[in-house]
Length: 326
Image (cartoon, rainbow, N blue to C red; front, side, top):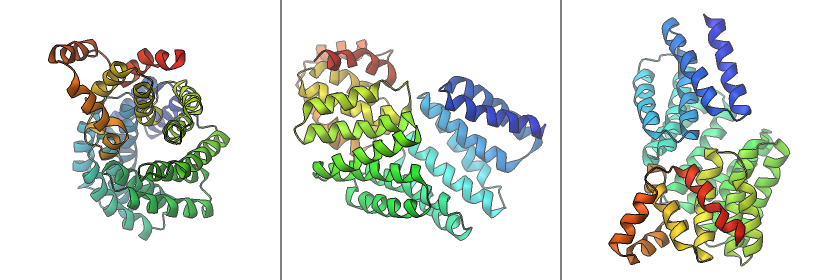
């Protein structure tokens, strides 16, 4: 049974690598069912986290909420420090996926000293990356910048090149939201370059979403458009879409496609990940709310009816042609 579980877990990773998230979810759910049967706590914790990651890419946020409750309850029964520390970190990451950012911060801050005390340098650095992201989400941009700059230095020494790239992208967004758009361009370009070297297409798309917003802010609309269109050619992936969608709203709105941007905004507000995010509000959400209030109620109702069956992926596919044609 243990061998079957391990094989299924490896198949999950393979499915993710080729972009077949739905198949990966099937493998992960079956592996979790078997792991629970044999009572292998380390594997259960890993699989609960991996399943949440897959649900995130599928935009199945209610399912993530159920996993959060399951992992929180399961972690209380764990006695081994290594497994308990991992469970705490994974729970914090799932809370971020779901959009409960203050709760994610408090959970990750509990996990971080546990990871460090166990000598898990990479795990502690990865945890810090998510603390930086959460700080962005709650609008604590200066603190986020400090975290990401320290992460870059630590990851360079690791060496953990993927975390260096993540730190560059995070720092880029943090300085952009503090009005330093030229620095944001530099950080985002470096993040995209490093992700390209690692051949992580989804993360390249994430970096390009930040780069597009920074280029737009520095008065380079054509370069911003090119960067964003490159990002949007990445297949459906939450890493890419979470930052590319606000960039697309911004570029569409600034090119006169207000209602298309509003359609995206209304779809985004279905998700706690945007609804609870000060970062999203400052990037484009507040601007979109102001535009929404200008519309007559009957037009608001028409727009909401038109997007009722959309998720973030499908609405991006529908409206990105406006940017391509512009």
